[in-house]
Image (cartoon, rainbow, N blue to C red; front, top):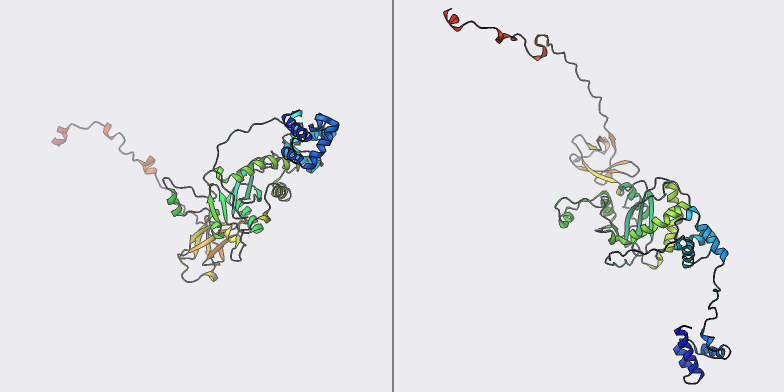
Length: 424
């Protein structure tokens, strides 16, 4: 009998002997008066054992059967389940095999069977805590994770992800490479689904920040206001950009990537995904709905700070590669090693020596904009290069080798005495 049970028995005997009231005993036992009366009635039949639980030494009425245990362990021993943990394993057993097993029950079974080892988490440096934002779309963390997502079954290594700071609502895509074009494509999809967020929180990758010059201070960088293509696109969309100085500053998306590298890899394995297209279909139809339902807070409970895409925001013209070029006196300009001619119908007064905006769209189309209107252009076809004239070969027979031979041996012949030359 435990000390707690001895204390309970003490108060019941006090109430039985009339030393305290039943109400006072109920307060000491933290139960109702009615339950005290039932316990006193049972003391007449059971004696001091009334405070001992009836199932002590017996299996719980809610204990799962041995057949359920054997079935669950047999599934976990399959090759595709070899690295499943208790929490994720319990979820997948319930989802795929309709086995209702608690994660702690499964943990005990797995430890007993040698399928799970108790792990101690190493202590980590404490980072200053930052409160979540208050609205959906007020701040969106944006990053890319490089990982072997298909475990060698296909060339899928990059997951571009966006996660809302307030709700943890997530969206993202697998892409071929972590480049400007691919990140713009993911941003395009997010904007069409939700609208324009207020701010994005990213790292200082060269996609988002221009590398500072040597010896340049932060204030000098701010005044220089140099932008990458993504930085320019965000400014034109009216979306603020916050650049983190450490991974911990955007810890929400960093932790979500660690979760994905565990859960998503296993789920893609179970789904037999082998290509980029199959992996993205699984993301859209299975993973994101499950993640947002399981880990994210209900979006409807938060004010929506996303702003709509107004008609003057032309996404194809904003989410593209943009450069400026100067129009020559012949109404041409150079771009990417090629010369382009502005069509005669698009020429207007004062256009020479002015700048045009050259846009390379995500689909590869080239557009040129001047003072808010697009110009018709065509490539300049260069005439075939003239053949070099064949010059006559230089005649060198009289000077073979580039040097005359008439003085060869001149200084080897003996000269007459000088007195003889003077006598003559």
